Length: 388
Ligand code: PMP
Image (cartoon, rainbow, N blue to C red; front, side, top):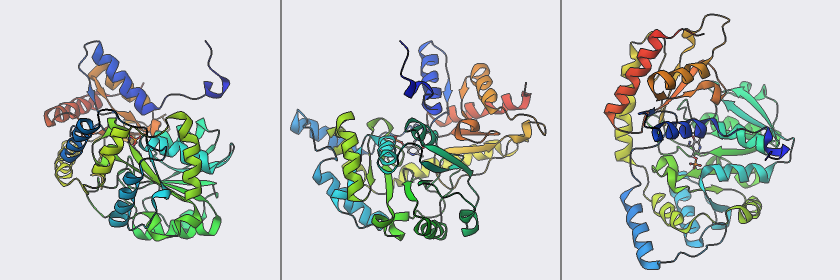
């Protein structure tokens, strides 16, 4: 049956589509190495697993909680915001969601009307653009500069909403306090609302994390800050995160969430409650750092790729523009297609993140031997690659 016109022009997220493809190839018996998204080989933190096991034992059947999440969970999330992010917030300004994706959809829904513009820096997480398109919004895509300056910001069209991803997927950029001050001044001056996705707040190797909301009157400006347990606590499949927003927006987001999923699953709320109280995942980050350094070293002598060590995050963002002659279309989609077909390695082409000529490699899944093997295959493939 033909789907509605409303959905007909939208496509599944490129990232989840590639991951889905890997799963079907594996189901057919093919051994595929999956660098397409970042799925940690770490389990959820031990205290999380213990708390969930205890909750199952104690409660047997789990209740519905209020749509915004259980009050005691939101009270402790407010304490996390105070302690780690320097933000004073009330539980009524927090909504627990099924991951950052749901928070993003609801936040955009709550602050925009169809046709409104959304400013996104590229390269970008595909969900920002896909969600904007689902909601009939107009994405404005602008190259993310190395440094955000007032001059840069003043050259931009004023959007209804600015989306910031700090730390940034896929480049690993960690916004400095000074850059965030410039952004604060800019939005205070032009009235743009802001959504800040801080899902990678604990995956920082170099620099420190600053929340925009800690630097401004976020209630007055209309700043929504999104957190997720997926990356910071290796809890991708638990599907849980939360948003901090002015109470009126939390109410609007709740109105949307109620009929769709109601509350996040109670067990995932128990998990999030404990996870966000455990602070920075030091052991996991020490291991990620070793992998990051190893991967960067393995690519260091390869002439066709420029690979910097990211300051944060689970991705490498490789510049492969030298594979293409001047004026030639940088078909990194074709590169990724042939890589998975010929070498059984899945990566994300930069095109899916708005910037052809780059490839994104998630380096935190499986074991180190698999990481080495996958990189060896990518290098072998690139050495022989000729764009067609
Ligand atoms: N934000 C960004 C920028 C991401 O890359 C990811 C993980 N892919 C997330 C959020 C996590 O999303 P979720 O909480 O829905 O798993």
